[in-house]
View 1: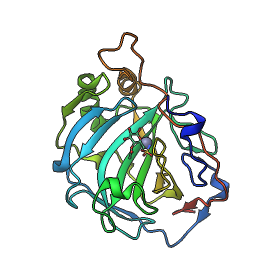
View 2: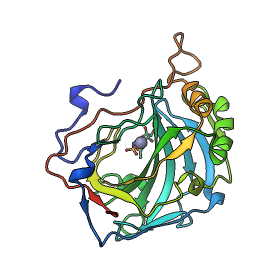
View 3: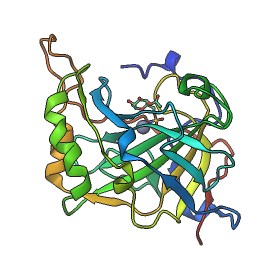
Amino acid sequence: MWQGPLAVPGGDRQSPIDIVVRKSVFDSKLKPLETEYDPQTCQQIWNNGYSFLVEYDDTTDKSTLKGGPLQDKFRLCQFHFHWGESNAWGSEHTVDRRLFPAELHLVHWNSDKYSLFEEAVMEDNGLAVIGVFLKVGKRHEGLQKLVDALPAIRHKDSIVEFTRFDPGCLLPANTDDYWTYHGSLTTPPLTESVTWIVMKQHIEVSHDQLAVFRSLLFTSAEEEVQKSMVNNFRVQQPLRGRTVRSSFT
Ligand code: SG6
Ligand code: ZN
């Protein structure tokens, strides 16, 4: 795939990382997150050959993220997941080396400073991504509407209308407790433009719901050999002197 040595720049704030709880630094100035999501901005879901993306209309400030470690207002453009072939791994970030079966990423761009995602993605303070770990347990009611839509986008490049989905239903009950650090996108262009906000609390989904994620394909309908969409996470990157701050003690 893309993870050849040439594709990986020698940056010093790459993602994902292992969060070492004992080394994270409590910062009393970190505020609670303020998410304001309008389900009406939800537009479509597509299989981009690496994950599936739920995309939001980001032409206005209708679905936004503020607060937390952020000075500016950020606009939601999409969310997606990373997951493993088994429940033993799949997340991109880890906590004290603990792996989770999947990880949700809600991607936002700085609409105070920039006018387009494409512009923000190249800039230092351009993006803010919320990461939420998924654990296997009871079925997640909010997620089910999404799971039901997945068979329609089984192959790469398929896209279907998907509307009125509130991404807030995928956040854990407590969003006040999180870790934050400066990092990068975990796929090309791997730009070091991301303020990562990783939730301490996980959400629970059922094994069956994750099994539907795993029934997606990396390959398009035309390809002869079909490949299951699993293990779509990047390998962990060195911390290189960065500090992970926590909003909680
Ligand atoms: C996923 O992550 C998405 C893709 C891309 C990538 O694989 O399929 O759309 O997202 C914002 C963006 O370019 C990187 O996003 S991530 O760093 O949050 N994982
Ligand atoms: Zn991601």
